[in-house]
Each structure stands twice: as structure tokens, then as C-alpha cells.
Image (cartoon, rainbow, N blue to C red):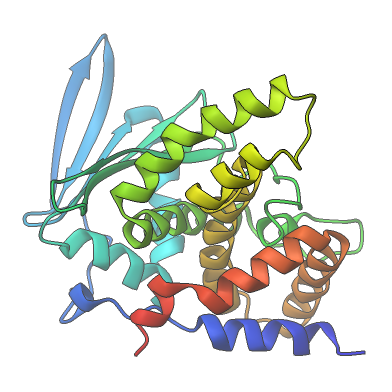
Length: 287
């Protein structure tokens, strides 16, 4: 039986560091606030962080700005985080908006995707929960981030690392959107309700030929598509954590927990490892 380290090491090697075409000659001061404008909307004060020429716009409520900058600094402290950030910051035809919401609590989401007529992603929004440095998602869809969940005997890994891992996960969703393109996204958005309607009306029979055909057309069942989306995010979180967790005892503990998660959930293991091997966005930028 292979050790946990032996299982994780090939994963990290296969994933590697994403090389971004727009990340050449990047500034070493990526975390600097180039321009700050304080605005009032509905009685709430927010900070707008924009660097001249950057494709990333950060709109953060004043009450969350300090914690957000800590999470961002933690993410950018790694080469992985810096490369991801600079890719979208320097993309010539893309605007990423980042905000923090109290309603999201310890979660996060990436949505409001917009593609142009050439099927290129030109904008998206990442919304981070105001308690991003707390809370651990379930292991079935989040085998990597869940592996950070502490136990009585586990070493202590700071909440800033947890928050940064969740940010890395959301950038993974962006990577998926760039790779998939707008046509597939629109197709899946249109056919998912069709699939669900047939599924509910046929007595939840997944062997229905109509469901099989719809799943074939849109690249999987709705559950599989959702899982793939989260695993894209988890691949990205794995890149970040593989770099940030350098202490040997912490690394052994994390690897063991991650290995346990992908072993316990058979579907997770198969689709997660398959995604790493077929991740076009990663492989095409490592050539």
C-alpha cells in the first residue's frame, strides 16, 4: 500500500504550477493598493481597490477591509496565488470583481459570468463570505479544503490559510469557465432544468434513455457537472496548499486527511483524479 505522501506527490507534480501567458514581467508589489476611493451606498461605506491597468476590481465594505487584505496577502504569498492573480489582473479583455458579503458567512461563490460574441469570458464576480477563515465544507465535494479541518490531535493551521485556500478554490471556478467557454455553459444552463424535470416525472429513473441522451449532450448529469465544478476549485486549492504547507508534521497530517477523503468517497476519488489528468486549462499552460 502506498503512503499518503506517495499518493499526493504525483498529484502535485501533475498539477504543477499554472503558467499564464499574461503573467510575464509581473509586478512584485501585487498586493499594493494603487487607488482607493471611499463611497457611500445606502448608508454603507465601501473601499474600491483598483490598480491602473488591472482587470481586478475589489469592492469591499469598510468593516471587512482589514480581514480581506489579510486573506489576500496570504493567497498572494505563494507563487501559485500570485500567478493566478496576475493572470486575471493582466488579462486584456477581462474584468474580475471581488467583494465580501456577510450573507455568504464562511462560504464563497463565483458567478455573474459574461462572455463576448467570440465566446471568451470577459467578466465574472467572486463573492467571499465575511467569515471565510472559519467553517469547513463537506468532504464529498471539497476533499482538499475539508482536509484542513482540525482534530484533537492535529496541528494548528491558521484561519488565514483556510481563507486563502477558499480563494484559490474560487479562482479554480474561473479557470473552468475560461476553459469551458460560454457555449457549453449556456448549453448546460439550458438542459439542466430539462434533465431535472424528466428525472422528477419518471420516478427518479436514471436509466431513462431521455436522461442518458441529455446527459451525453451536456457532458454529464447535473450532479456530475456540479461535482466537476467543485473539483476544479479543489485542484486549485491543492496547488496553493501544496506550496504553503511546508512544515513536515503539518504536511503529513494534511496528506493523510486528504488521502482519507478521496479514499472514502469513491465518486470523489475517480472524478477528482480524472480531472487532474484531463485538465486542459492546466496542461495547455504548462507546455
